[in-house]
Length: 337
Image 1: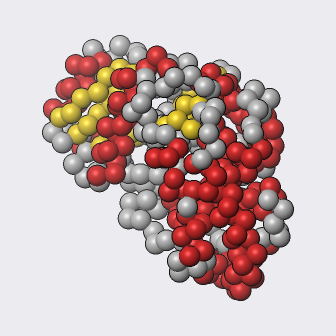
Image 2 (image 1 turned 90 degrees about the horizontal axis):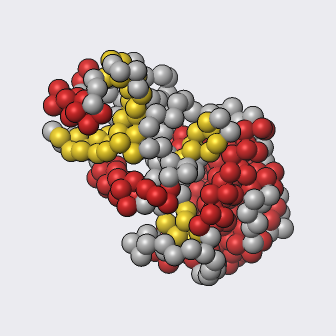
Image 3 (image 1 turned 45 degrees about the vertical axis):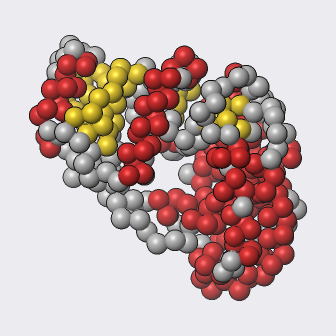
């Protein structure tokens, strides 16, 4: 049985025998115990395996019930492990292999243990933020494979989401998340939207230097192991301004009850200085993304996603208001997670 409010995941006993045999052949030992790994924001099968020879491994997969989005993500992630293994090795788990069998696509990785956060203890946030700065600094300005998405591919949509809000149906669906404070929210958007539109548009056109971007650094996709940052979940990698990756991480920490994003970024910048204009654009673009998503209907099988996006919307818009000297969006307190 899954924990309350967490995505359902199939028990190990339901995994086809052919798939379990293939796991044994690839790892060279049978799984003596398989514990479902809860977390993430999808119902895809994930297990922490304890093998008969004492070793451990992590299995993640898509199965016949998985949607096309999940299948495409797994294919991209496998390519990253296979083709960028040397680049990501200091931060990624060891890749043991992947296979397809009976409609399953399975990846086998080093088991890095349980999540480090939340709760976000200050010492952990500080260590992770500094290490994330090291991650970006290590690839800043280097030559990266042409198949990795560039900003004009990966960030162009995000850069124009506020334009869609301003020129489409307007911000009313977002404002209505604030309930009785919706009218206050609409007045705030009247004042703030021109600034947010201009700032967000710059994220895809900032120019070099670019870094290798993880694209989804949040608590589910990182481990803090013996003072070392390890990252998992690599399907959304790309090339672009490190400030976008860093800002996405910083707001996610605050959304999960950790320090404010300014503090997270201060620790990050001890290792990798951030360009103020790039950070301004990143925060505005992220606010546009959550404004576009947070009010939408719940997605079947993803019971926590919209709630988390509403928390991210609150954090990111408040941060954008501070960075761009906009009126304080006090109406955000009316949005419930």
